[in-house]
Structure formats: structure tokens, C-alpha cells
Amino acid sequence: MDLSLFLTAAFAFLVINGMLLSASLLVYAERRVSAFMQNRPGPNRVGPVGILQPFADVLKFVLKEDVQPAQSNKFIHAMAPVLMVVIAMTTAALIPFAEGVVVADISVGVVMLLALTSISVYGVTLAGWSSNSKFPLLGGLRSAAQMVSYELSMGLAVISVALIAGSLNFMTIVEDQASGQALLGWNMIRNPIGGLIFIVTAFAETNRAPFDLPEAEEELVGGFHTEYSGMKFGMFFLAEYVNWFIASFFIVTLFFGGYLIPFQPLLLDIAPALDGTALFAVLQFLSLMLKVCFFVFLFIWVRWTFPRFKYNQLMDVGWRYLLPIALANAILIAVGVILFDSIGL
Image 1 (cartoon, rainbow, N blue to C red):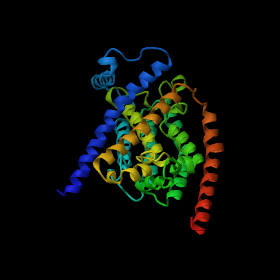
Image 2: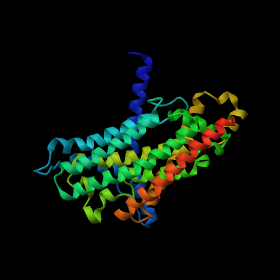
Image 3: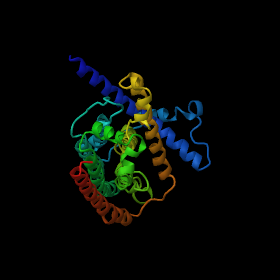
């Protein structure tokens, strides 16, 4: 076997297992932070300070009986959660973890990201339809309408970033943000409207509160996965948390410098020998993870702070506000790029 192919496969294996482990850690983090915000202990029984509670939950999912509705479509009912997990894990291959460290460094990474996020709606919709129950069906239809509404705005926000960088490659987009010598090159500074739109649409695409209409317990019992139990329900749970983690990665990659260390050009001026070393790659990875952890906390903070939108409010925000603003922003960015290129800046 070719050595480069073996190394890529080994790295992909590490990334997939890292995502699986991260889902458990995110469950624990969410429980701890929400407990702190509500002035209660949170998980504190299984393992030291409750750290093993997520693994106990996984064991519970594995041992629970798998119940399927008698009139459901058995094959699609079983495949829907698998589809969600596969798409979530595939998207992780596009994340640049450090300079030159990525599973799939493809020239059209942005297009692949938009394609994978658009496919994920099929898992939710098929889960709702195949259950042959009215509440899951309504949850699936809500999810389809919600994702279509917000994907347009998300796509335009991503396009505005690609216009600035002049590339659809994630590694190029990250390196382009080093042009400001420090934090001024980050796309959140150069393109703040696009950054805010992408963050809001990331909440909607991952079905996180206040955009969790497909799972509205007060209205739909539990939404599209009401008729799921055992490990199939656990797979939906896993896909949701992995998608949330990956959304944080792409927010950082597109708008907050990705793996770039704050003031990285100044650091390399002081220690030029550091460039290209393993230590520098580790520092870049740690920089990326610190930024991602901030947005992980932001996702939790928002969930336990803001109430859920009503459905008409959800549609209004997506179609009447975010889409026109995102379209105008993309046009302005395109015009600005043309003008700057024409005068040689």
C-alpha cells in the first residue's frame, strides 16, 4: 500500500474516533454548564465528578430494546440514523487542523461542505416519514422547511468568504486570513455581516435552540425521532452533537482564522525556525481547539438562555431578513473585490 494513502487512512481513523469521543465530552459539558446556569449539581454519580455519565448513557442505549412501529417502513426507519451519522463523520474530513493537516484537502471544499449539509436533511425527513406517525412526520417536514430556508443564507455567507479568499479550498481560506498580520485579517473583521449570518444559520442547521422546532417537545412529543429507541435513537443523538462540534470548527475556519495562532506573523518574525516544525503544528491545533471550545460554550449558552422561536417567526427570520441581508452582503463583497483588484490592492 502507498505510504501516503496509509497515513491518510490512519488520520481519518483518528478523526472519526476523535469525533465519537467528542460527542461524549460535549454531552457532559452541556449537562455541566446547564446545571451551573440553573444552580444545580448536574451529573455527579458515575465516575469522578460524573465524567463517566455519557459512557453510561451509551451503554444504556446499547442495552435498550429496539422497538419499531408495526406499520413503519422498516428499511428506511433503520437507515435514517445511519445516514445522519455517516454524513456528520464525512464532513469532518474537510476540517484543516493545522497547516497541511487535513484528511481531504480538495480544491472545492466549500462546495463539498454545502453539499453534505444539504444532504443531511434527508436523514431527518426520512426518519419522520418512515415512522408512519403524525408527530415525527411533522417534525421531518419542519426540518426540511427550516434547513432549506437557512441553507440559502448560509451558502451566501460562505460565498462571500470564498470571494475574499479567491478560492474554494479551506486551507487557502485559512491562510488568506493571515494577511492582516494579526487578528485584523480574520474574516469576522473583514466580513462581519457574513460571519454573523453564518453563526445564526449554523444554529438553525444543527437544530439547536432557539431553532429546535423539529424536536419541539411541547408540540411534537419529540419530533422526528419520537418513534426511535435504543441505539437508533442514540445515533441521532450522536449525529446532533457531532454536527454541533463540526459547525463550531467551520465557524472558526471560515471567520476566525482557523488554526492560525493569534499574532502568528509576529510570532514567526520572532522565531522563524518554528515554521514548519511539529511543535508549530501542535500550537496551531491548540489554537484551533481553544477557538472551537469557545463556540461550543456559545452553543450551550444560547440553548439555555433564549426561548424557542414560533414557527412563523422562524420562517420570517430566514426568508425576510437573513436571505436579503446575505444576498446584499455577497453582492457588496463581490463589487469590493472587483474594485480592489482593478486598482491593484
